[in-house]
Image (cartoon, helix red, strand yellow):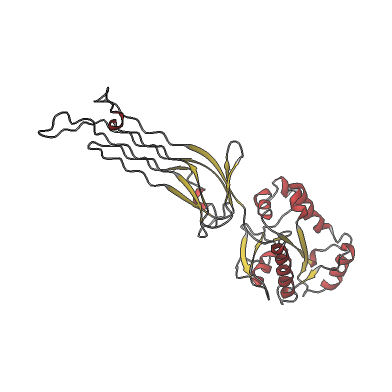
Length: 334
């Protein structure tokens, strides 16, 4: 299934049913009077965050959603049936905004949150309501109120505590498959993930946390080059960034080139992204000359907290998981 994280749709709530014009007609009863019933209310359009949903795929082809109309009133004071609400399920992490103004209507964080985006029209009153001492036989009733129509933009931003960023083929998918139960597609040739993957990580202690591998970024991503902005938005939801660097890609003449290139894209997309805490991780440390390349990077980086791991052998992976767990625990305590 294709990953869809943005959609523009139009929703319409149901019209209210019209009130009824009716007069009581029974044998042996004269001047029975008006007995027209009210129309039923139209259905609301409701969005609900559901953990069963992972993408906005259902909105890829269908762009128009209509809630049912209310039933019309009938004689003998029979009310029209109020319509059922139209409930649209979306994944947690979805932001709903006005497609024309950009104003945010609701930001779904937790499962089972819901909000009404279009209120159904109220049913019209039957002629029974318009009887008075001077007007005993009203021959009119109210029409139902029309429903509301909204043009909406749906935008999914993945909810993960930790986001793994880096160039394509840096080993992000391999790392997430090692530290969590997620099983992304992995290849031994230059390959970039087309859909973010989320897995739950259980460290040696503390609460489990969610980690997402953000598809490979390249220079110009902030302006839409490559996968670009399509996936940079997912980084915004994370608390910590794991900046993964393939140790074999380090240039001895300019060891920080790739590290700086990714960070430049984050800054150009959003200043907030540049302020997120990063854990720099050099991977594929089991390969030949990895030690020399790592020392060159660390010397230029000027920080001895760089994590050295090998997803293939498991070296350093547990230490990385525990470090992330401690950092997240400090976040929650604050």
